[in-house]
Image (cartoon, rainbow, N blue to C red; front, side, top):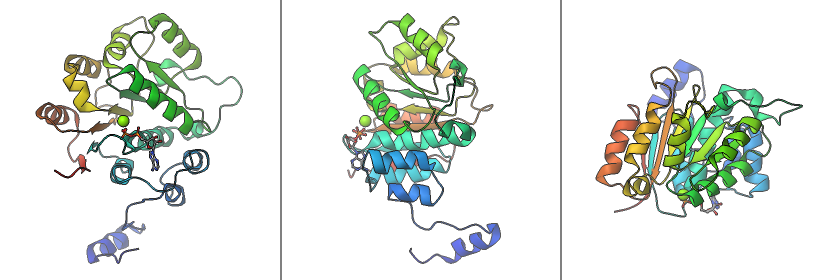
Length: 259
Ligand code: ADP
Ligand code: MG
C-alpha cells in the first residue's frame, strides 16, 4: 500500500470506512476486497486462469465498479471485453444477489428481466462477447442471449422467452428491431447497464440512427440508474459526440493509448 494522503485519512475518519488507496490490479483481490462476487472471481482465476488485469481493465473495472460511466480508449487485444463484462455483471448481481447462485428447480427469468444490453458492430464480435460472458457466468443463474442479424428472429425470440435473458448482446439493427417490436416480448424496464463496444466501428458502419433508436426504447435514465460503458480503439469526432449524448455527468475517461 502507498502511504495515504492527509485528505484520504480525513475522509476515512469521517466515513469510518477503509479508503482503498491503490486500485485493484489482481482479479483475486476483487473478491478479497468485496468488490465482485466470489463466484465471478472464481471463474476468472480458477477456470479462465487469469491473474493480473491488463492496463485498460485496471483503469475501467475499478472506476466502473464505483458506479460512474466510463469511456475507455485502448487498442485491440488489450482485454476490453472483461473490462465491461465484470462491472456489468457485478452491477446486476448487486441489484439482485439471488442471481449469483446457480438456479434451483424451475426458476426462469422473464424477458423483462433484461438488465444489460451490449451493442457490438458485428455478429462475430457479438457472439464472441456472449461466449466470454457465458464462461464468466457459469456459476450463476444469469442468462445471456444474442440478438444478431442473419439469424431467425422468431427462433431467437422463442429461445429468449423459454430461457429468459439478463444480458442481451447484439448488433444495432437486430437489437433495435426486437426492442421496437411490441410483439417481441423483449423489454428492458429494469435496465442497469448499456455497453457500446467498438464505438468507433459502430459509428463508421453507420449505426448512429439505430443506436439513437435503441435508446428511445430503454427506460428513462432519470428513472432507472443506468450505467453507460463505452469502448473504442480510436476517438473520432463522432465518438466524442456519442459520449456527449450518452454519458452521465462525472463520467470517467480511461485513455490507454499514447498519441
Ligand atoms: P479487445 O476487446 O481489447 O480486443 P479481448 O477482450 O478480446 O480484447 O481480449 C483479448 C484476449 O486477451 C482474449 O483472448 C482474452 O481472453 C485475453 N485476456 C483478457 N484479459 C486478460 C488478462 N487480464 N490476462 C491475460 N489474458 C487476458
Ligand atoms: Mg473487443
